[in-house]
Amino acid sequence: MKIGIKYLFEKKPSIKVVIFAGKGGLGKTTCSAALSYQIAFNLKKKVLCFSTDPQASLSDIFERDLFGKGEISLAENLFVLEIDADKRIKDYVEETRKKIKEMYKIDEIPKEVEDYIESAAAEPAMYESAVYDAMLEVVTQAKYDYYIFDMPPFGHGIRMVAMADLLSKWVDKITEARRQAFEYEAAAAAMKRQKITEREDMMLKELEDIRNRIVSFRNLVVDPNGTAFIMVLIPEKMAILDTERAIKMFENLGLRVGGVVVNQVYPSWIIEDPKASEYLKRKVSSQKPLLKEIADKFGDMIVGLIPTYNKEPKGFEMLSKVAQELWESSFTIENLIGK
Amino acid sequence: MPKEKKDSIFKAFKDTLMGFMIHSQVTSMLKMKTYTEYLFMIMTMGDMLGMPLLPPYYSLRLLPYMVPNIKSWKLRMLRDRDVTDIVVG
Image 1 (cartoon, rainbow over the protein chains, first blue to last red):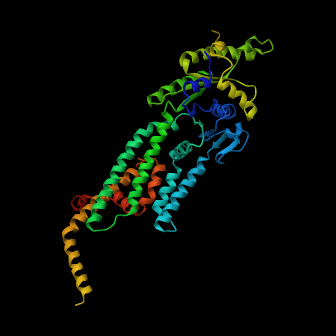
Image 2 (image 1 turned 180 degrees about the horizontal axis):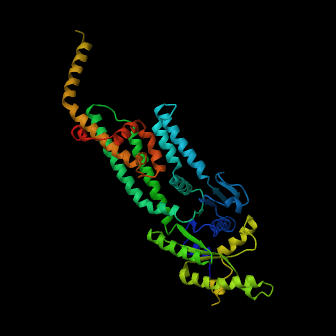
Image 3 (image 1 turned 90 degrees about the vertical axis):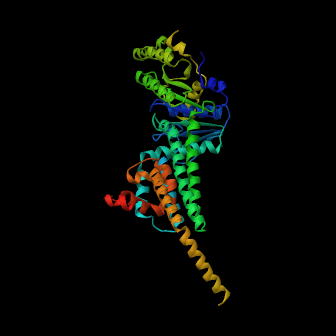
């Protein structure tokens, strides 16, 4: 069976967003960078590689300081965004302060409001929301042909998907309460022949926008036609078990995993190489049953096989090699497990 | 008596009459509005009272519109209550 992201794209040409997810340190960032490279250099399409990982290493892989610098063009068609979520939160909070000061023409924010702003800014959930909001923002702007996302290890983004339904229903309830309060105020104002304040209507608009954002993010991640959600794993017992669990968890949330990329695979020809050390040969043969397990468990879901390299995949030269393998693997799983 | 003065006396009389007729309705509407508004604030700013119901990222967007009501809302929500509250409301 031929393996490669190429076949996934051929099967579903409507895919415009690829999300790489999985445990930390298994190669999500490498896969994101390599696929972006492939799309930009070989498909000649405009692509944005976006890292949402707080320990993002796109800067390391592309060998350039990209952190918090916005959308940076690295080559024709290749754009990278490594978001500085802390700065984004700081700006967002500052914007709220500014708005309050402007709305009420005050120089200092009331203490109880300032206390609230400070505690809200320190909430861990703030970080996630800010990152996913940024993610949604770049996709909505529709400036690129493809978007490749490097997601943080399980949990965060997924919780957002799980929460989306609940949250949007909650926002509906909130909107209902707001509308009711607005109606009472409007009735009272009409009786007194007064005009109603503009602030009420603005609040309903904000609520509608919040709801749209939450729902759009969920739709973006779970859309099986436009988005490929790909898990990255390595041939190790723990990674296999975690991936299996994660796939079940995602499916329960209505999120269909579009494929699995197996990274750090030792090519089987090493065993026949007389120059290869015993240590390496043992390593290759110990990998065989694990690869067999991967083939049994994930079968058709495997969309990528990336060999392990003797050098870290950094810089365009190495990335082009990884990109080639990820796009169309030079070996098959049958080669590796010896069927 | 000049015409303007006549008009203003007539207007004051009309407003007073209207006030008698609708004052209680307006007050009850505003009371209902305040209660619904308090409920709305619990739903959105609940974390101020230890009830985190909406992620703070979204609460912050609504915060500017609620600034004038926060102090009175917190006072009302957090004040001690006793048996006379049932009578007074």
